[in-house]
Length: 562
Image (cartoon, rainbow, N blue to C red; front, side, top):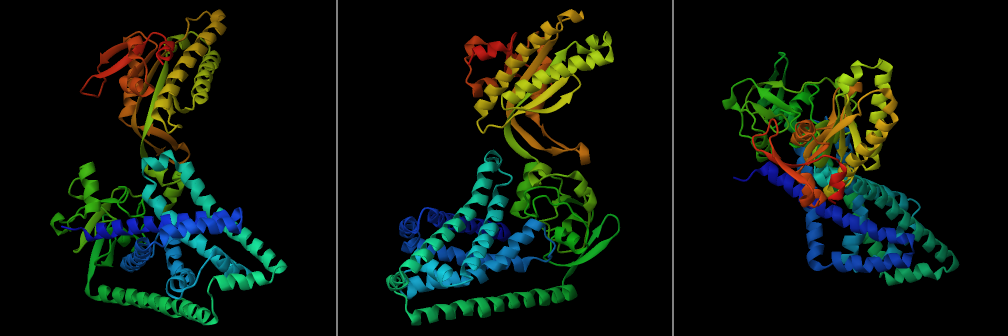
């Protein structure tokens, strides 16, 4: 059975990505104007050879039409205007795009395809920059609106994926720099053409002649542009608005469902609304990190009323249920559209001001993200006994010396300190996109820690204490990285099986009387010569199967195996 909602969302995503790629290449072409108008025209020749091929031409405008109609469907299907700031920006841009795009399409589509207009960059810049006093402003606004709408959509598809976490800086650099470069290229070419038209008045006539432009053609293009901008599109918006109003009146009178909350409050909603939209209608704060797209479970609710009255989960919700093994009574509020009266208990029930206190930077921090990482634990041996025989200030002095040398070794090898736990330290190595390099950095850091510890022992040789000893455990694999805690006590950390294994390996250094233990996964990623290392098969508390690991009496042994 075809899931209509999932199919529509998938089609919107596909058409949106295709159109975004078109805009991306178009803005790249604009950027060539930073060099010269001639370079811009040369780039356009390649651009047109690709995009105005008959197949791609009809595919492009067919995609644009489908995306436009699906956008109208999505907006019309909404039962609530309560949205996140990002959704407001994206949807506001979506409403503005057809109005701003109408005049541009009248020239580049109607004029060039059907009236024989040669819409070269020279002609477009002449008509929007040199001869039109506000044309360049409207063009800049159109670029900003289209690019913002597309970029929010693309980031929405990528934000919970590993590629986005690994290349976030690259994505953001492109998103923020490309429209600036494109508009800068347009302005630079515009100034170049304006300067030429002053020194050579015939240049304007030559451009108009080469473009095949006629007065009658101009009248036709302006007529179509005005018709689209000021009659057809406003009429569509008005029709859509009247539809929403009449639908609301009709559904409220004939088709309504009651959503009751565990605290006794309730709200009547029209059928077709989600439980999340019901909460918005009731002005109740309902957590939804992903914006109601079924990509997280923060909006989940426990259904207290009769489960037989619930509709079958759609494919988006079913994927989450199958992955996490939810009880039948646990449903996603953003996907559940009750057809009968329902009673629920939101399982994550923060009030609005509590969300502000969490002070999370973004959705990724709040929801967590699974990514490949390398975890290191190191711990001083016998420090508790040592501290019993020293003054408190002396203990703090020695401990801070130890923390400094560990921190220096970790940061110098592209790692970061996650937390200090008593006399232990947890570090994360994930700054490089290459797991192999992260593993090598962690091993180098462990070697430098032991070398610096030897220097510290020499420094403390007159303190009449036993030499400080250390145990280090390293493991690599997937971990959930996110901001955890509450208020001022929240911080970014890692959790998961990879963290647990690294901690257990550090503890096992006591059993094996060694300085460093790391998993076979680390050795494989770091491409070590295993013949130079002592391998062990060891049990890890909390895991059924034994794991292969390597123990080193000195951490330098791992470096020698590079």
